[in-house]
Image (cartoon, rainbow, N blue to C red):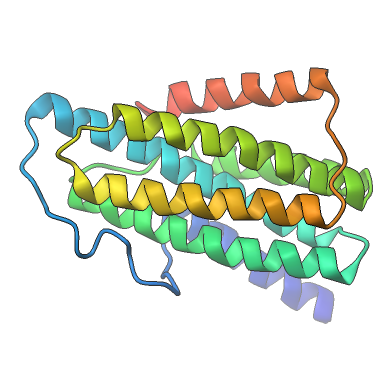
Length: 208
């Protein structure tokens, strides 16, 4: 019965994540930022980038759920749980910003979630050191991706920029925590494959 209950709970969470339904435990960093008017080009740019970031958080929920479930050590599972809570905040913030911009979440969220859960499960099955190494490398790439977004978001879009900056800070902390727990260095071919997969996801999610 515990297994059935857990499956129902996990399925319900997955549906909520895919649909962009969620609440944050921390205040939205954009709540006190100025809400400047955006022209059509700037509006499209902000909406596209925030949709990409929302997809990243959909993937993060799936990754951390899978990696935490199949981790070997309790301290590793606790780290994934804490990181997952932070990512849930990011998910809620980006969804709210997309709504404010009058835009939509990715129509391919079920695909992103399912693929990320599979990758998370495979990473966890390689043992905690590799599992944490996958996190460290993922967060390194995500931090670089967010830093680039801060350069390309419209300067006047203070709300989106505030959200992205807090996300960047949190991702750095997650990567450092994974390293402190004994993350192994990921092989160069795998790092390259992760970058390629990320490029496909961000290119598609910007529009769809």
